[in-house]
Image (cartoon, rainbow, N blue to C red; front, side, top):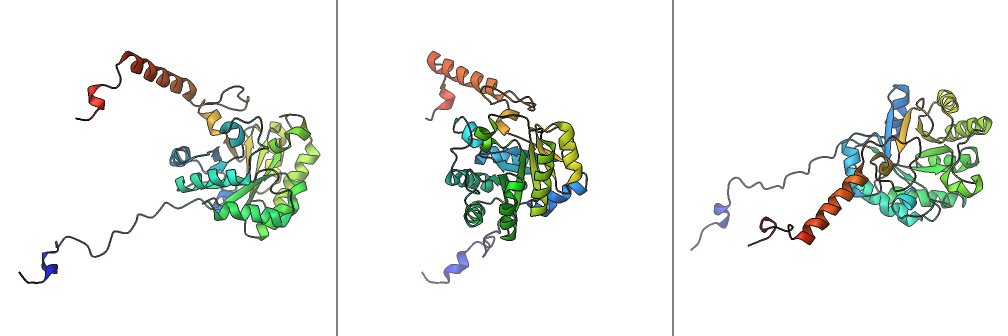
Length: 285
């Protein structure tokens, strides 16, 4: 039998594969900063893995923080100090792949930005190169102004973190509200002047956070800093009611997933032990 084999090719088959659907537009650093000028409040949550980041992003938050709080929330440690740069990148890469819309910010772990500006740029550069994150966050204000300036000069957007710094828990003597007005105002101005595009204010009296928010042109993202900040950030496990042990007073849980997970696991165990699960409908012929 002869003939042209191409004659039997279905007419409906395209010569070119379909183009992939474009991902939604990510919120950029300039857009994030401009929310303050536009009077738009900013919502941020932490995320540490792909499925959580996907859900948080689809729910519409403006920012997602891959926090070194993962040391306590995911690893079960007593503070954030043991978290390594490689661990931050590991989690940031998962979150970055999941997110289509929110601005993704990644914490620089202790002591990655205390080793000189070159080491800080190297560490922050790795975070951006090895994940889809758009910015880094570091704790400090005036004491880290030089590092903030060096990072921004290298094209790395920086979110500052003033007030309570969990990485300084030993120096501070615990997780305490920070009330030194002069120091906090100086830190906020120094961070903004050095080029930070936003700053977290943690455990700061509400009236002082309001004063700082009015004094700087970049957004303030509060956590335990009252309602006057330009935005709010929470640890996602606290928000969802997954936290075991103490829950800070500034958290308003929106769910009780801890109880729901416990109920589901108990129901599973009881059905397995009773023979109710699996049933015929859960098997294959």
